[in-house]
Picture (cartoon, rainbow, N blue to C red):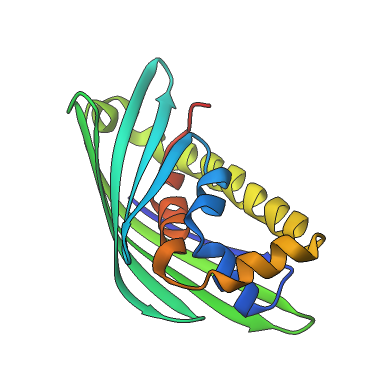
Length: 184
């Protein structure tokens, strides 16, 4: 399944990059994300719950940074499996940022995902609509959180300082897990 989404954040590109690369901020916006852990720079894990109709699954996800060119581009590989091994997901993801006028940033992410097992079999052709719905929720949560941070200078300053690899998880999970409906 291929997903491509573009949206605007009302912050300069450096702040957008910092936010999108802060794993705990991204995790808080991702529907169904229960926890995020930095294993080492460029490698992260997350626990995410997915509900698709009557199927409820809990995924353990590993994310690795493949390439980055701050503050404009990053690429990731994601792999995950349901806790009982009945479903597996893998994805190649990218995030691209472009500075716009008036201190705004255009964000484009792509994800090419493969879903096998119970979830892939059950979801079938409905997965694209399902993914679009989750993407809308995720983007709305990111825009809301960025706005909240921007209106609170101390938090904004702290997030802006976190430009290391630790935040890559948020962008990647948003792209990859945007294919599913999350349980909360």
